[in-house]
Image (tube, rainbow, N blue to C red; front, top):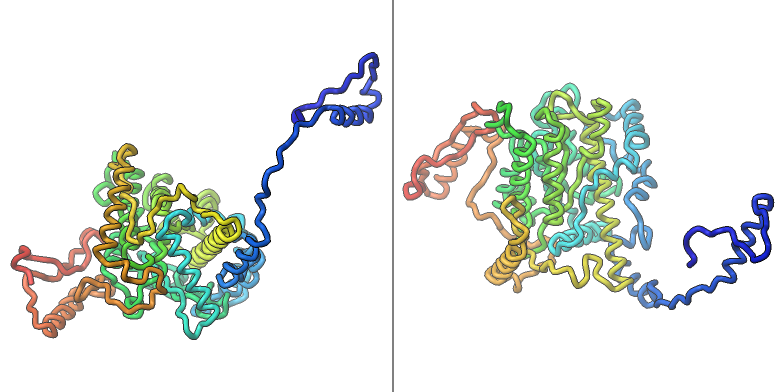
Length: 520
């Protein structure tokens, strides 16, 4: 009765030319509202928090990292915009003195203030964890580590971030005029570490660049599965694992590249989904009974590896599907600058002839990661505020049936997974997690620890990754001979292999030459 369009009121017996007296129209409309009966609206109980709820919220959040930021809510854009001058200074790389000059400072300022405002940086956020018990626990763990480091840096370690990727990740082609196979100081993982630590003026994070040129997610999956970390990191494991293999996972299969009838768009989509899913599942079960590391996907690929633009976007499609399925953290540098690079032809952020790009692109990847992390923090604090003040589970309430077993994995997302079967597959996955939980005696172990417990989780006596310019045939042979002498176990049925005819299809490796029963 109170909504809709008002008609000009008519009083019986009187005709008033309202066009000549327009002020009367508004007065009569108000009069009609006064005489029209207004329906009774039942008073509903207030949905605002009570004083007791607010006190509870303050008690719960004051000791968390959220207490350091505006309440009850804040956005990544707000934090980014209000701290831009400090972000500019934190982005300067002291490890590359050649880039510390007025011209590069002006370029840095222009990129942050003009080319890449917060409205554009928001494109980096593809998916933030929200509903999965394991990844929600992982998010809570990393912010607890950060808070403790900020509060007492002498007795609490920095957040440990392990980055896996190929030649892009290790900085090939990053610094102009240098043709080195890798440049770790110029690559985005180091820039991310500098950005965060220089912003906070302390070593808040430690980023381990574990990239290996010419490899893909399959190699990273084995590195995670077999705990192939540097000695320092192997003692405790990473708090965060980052898959930055978008470039190499987007390479069309070798047997299809020259086939004019091949559907490379679908082929790359399936290949990327398979490789990335293998990595996710290995990472989410790598900590056994403890909180798994936060799994992050960094899409830093802009091509060119095939003619179809849709094909060059296949990885992003697969990444987003899996991030939502496993509730992992997905970030895309590609989405931040794709239109600038592709539609405007700006070479700042990509290379039309090669997959490797300049230092400004690497810096923008670090910014994308940083901005997305602020969004993750904002979501985390919002959810914490909702739980504390409104006393409800912001991840789904009674409908949230995701189990709390850290070993739980949903069924693999494949073409063979049908809607009619998904409930049964989910039940099987849950049962498997419960059985593993019992078999590994997880109920007797700490599941919410800080990751500081010393434990050798590698199932191998020795392991390594052969890389171009790194472990070659002589180095591998010497390594294995020395191990054989020290252990007293002779090597039979194994040899080094060096077949580079197909590019990175077959690399230097240690291969079996005899059947199982003859190998030692």
